[in-house]
Amino acid sequence: MYSERPQSQDGSPFTGTTKNVSGADDNGRDVNAGADTAPLGARAPHRSAIGGAVIPRFIGSEIYRGSSYGALHPLRVPRVSTVMDLSRALGWLAPAQYLTSPRAKPSALAAWHDPTYLEVLQRAERDGTLGAEERLRHGLGTAANPIYPEVFRRPATAAGGSIMAAGMLRGGGVIYNPGGGTHHGLPDRANGFCYLNDPCLAILAFRRMGLRRIAYLDIDAHHCDGVVHGFGNDPDILIVSTHEERRWPFTGALEDRGGGNVWNLPLPRGANDADMAAIRDGLILPLIQDFAPEALILQCGADAVAEDPLSRLQMSNNAHWAIVAAAATLAPRLLVLGGGGYNPWSVGRLWTGVWATLSGAEIPDRLPPRAQAVLRGLEFANNRLGRNPPEHWFTTLRDAPRTGPVSGDVNARLAHLRARARSWV
Ligand SMILES: [Zn+2]
Image 1 (tube, rainbow, N blue to C red):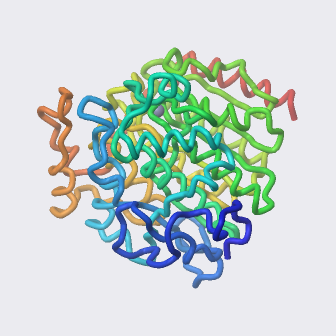
Image 2 (image 1 turned 120 degrees about the vertical axis):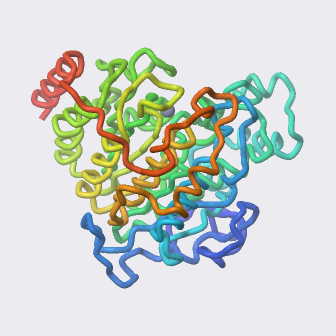
Image 3 (image 1 turned 60 degrees about the vertical axis):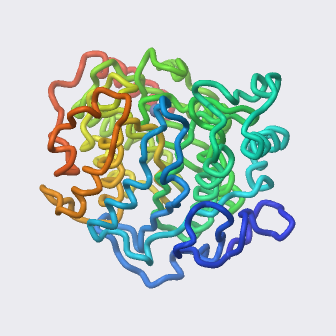
């Protein structure tokens, strides 16, 4: 079972008991932890359509349903709950595949986070407020990182899912935790809508299992500054990031290489599926193949699509799904996370398609009525995109491809990084 746990009083890294991992008690209060943390290989093998020898697993939680950062915050929209509802409506989420995310204990989160910050974050949730000095010191109570009702429980649940996933992947396999991917979190402060950093905690969980070589691939529209802060100088961690140039957090320059294993390809405004395909085949896949990781973490933020209100990129969800499919061939252990994504229809459709790709489900050209009802039930208040959504946001998962010639900027940056890769090997 889960022998490489962080230290805690009862030996479990999670709050609550170990029962009912796939059960209905699923609102993120004090639920279940490790009953299902046996290696996936211990289960009956079931070959998925893209090569996993075990059943891909989906980690979700009801805590994401109805939780909001506030009426005007980009994270006011439902995201993970849409993916759960759509996947179930399509018959893609059998009870055996679904796991309720446990909530990580502070002692488990302290593997990467400052204990004082964790105490302050819990107190912020309990009291609903903090003093000015603590808000300033820990980046809390800001427009980006407000003190909202689940400000500790929700990120601790996302982190618990990623920590549990790493433990479950001991024997190999594929796990999807769309509530994870909080790649801006810093050890002692909230940053960029993130309060904790579940990718860093997952890397450390893999490390506790004895894995050394871990690849982290991030295709969110924003640079993964928190993950680079944690592991940019680690020679056994490969970090590859694509992100829109000249966009917050303004890190991740083409020339930045951390300790030598950090690769950044900043995308020009308007980058589309063709640009991403060139980067995928010309840089991402060769880098990860050459690195031969024991585990791969893919942060699959959904904010690089054309309809996202927080970026100026022009991809369709086909670009993301093609990378997910390729990622499944690159390492014996694959953990796929969510991340950004601020249009409720595009993030729900994209991340549901990620699950279809991982689980081998066939995406229909036109969604059945039950699945359409999930999408028709979404609202996007306080955004012009919510006023008159196009019909295909309700009736399809797959976007029309957005292709064209590869931009000159992308070709030049690819050539630069490929030259670096050749000289480095
Ligand atoms: Zn983002």
